Image (tube, rainbow, N blue to C red; front, side, top):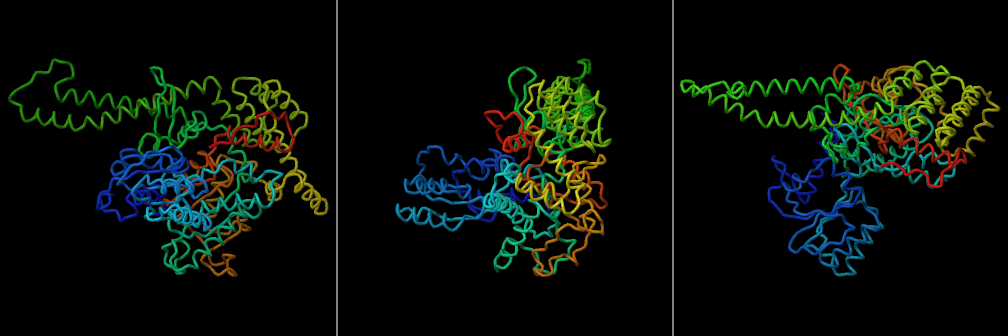
Length: 622
């Protein structure tokens, strides 16, 4: 697979751990050097899903520390630094060098170090007469977190709030866009591809697309650039398409409850960096890893929860059957089998097979036990909060475009946490084709009864009413609404002017999945014909993309403002059902649970003076 981001990023990290020396076929450097690894918190999160402690040992790393911790000198040993290029990190590196903590310092920055910081590093080490300790300085272009072969996050917190903040000025918006562009550039540099860029016009997605296009163009002018593609002769289907979207493109997916295993584990149990901590069966807390090394997780992540429970039972029965078979063959089944000397060779053969099968059986049992425990904890939450009802009714609302009033009120007054009810109320608002003021008042009073802060609900209501006004206004009054909305909303105007028709997903297939499928096909389609086309390899004048027709075999889909496992799962299903199978990488500024995204909507509501704002605004998600 060409776009295996996890593999590519891991290869870059292994090369870095081996002092940027070529790595042989066994995955280690030809000359083994013992070393120390120093990282900051952000780079620790990059390493965490990819490299385990045993891998560090394999590559000669004997000790590892956070850069901001006090450390004692370790002489005659090189230190590999993997940090973000920031002022505090540069100062700490200068201090480490001047104190002579390590024999030599191999500096690796997660993205390109700006010239002023490089000059600070040079002058600081020169001033302390320690510049000779700096062995090498590398820009690694690894400033993103890869969670699966085809899933990544830039781990940029609260980007939806920053891009939609009514008080944000042009400078703040430009800074956040530049940060997103820098992260995307790192992803493309790691994959060594220059994609064709497509996005809806207007809003943050277009801002990111234009800035990324310019950054790639500027970089491609250099003779020694990071992209190894063969010049301008590559035909369009051999290059990937980069589809950029803004969270407002399909708001509901970030809020809805979902009943599939992977989104449920993330949303309910708080899966972070592929790790999970839940209550163990015998008390105490248990930590688990859920990644591509877990075959059950890979196979069943997109199945609805009841199917997962059945699959666990099926695998447990198969395991028991296989254990019984091993016992039977080795004479340990019921204690009645007698050892017959005449069949010595046969028995020895069975024993050897049994011994060889033990590691595989043990591993299978560990996976079954892990998912049994996770499913048990999930089931408890589902029953306590009626999460199955929430998922079903929200989905029905999105398809039918509304809900019966008695059903609506019974959910809001029934089981579920405050956040569950708030999310359900927002989905009601989004899915309703027309807003019934009396019904909305009833919903708001039901939320108030449950002591729910209605800020997020009122924020979405305001956005929705603007869309309705825009849709019905004539051109003269429309410009007045737009002027007023611009003053009130700042950047979130994109949600209004772009006409958020995807606020209502008309069927089970997500609007994002439908649109990506159309963009990869590259055929004329009224839904995407007006999308922007940018090709960083083409002359600027011809970047309308007249000659860039599909179909595309590979796509990178990026959601500005926060993504989730529901969209990731939908895109992977799309890729698998294509003939031949296509490859789609999904990325986002940050991966958010429904509650974390609603917290950001609440913050925006508070900034606009809506609702009962709490003294302490909710903390942004990871």
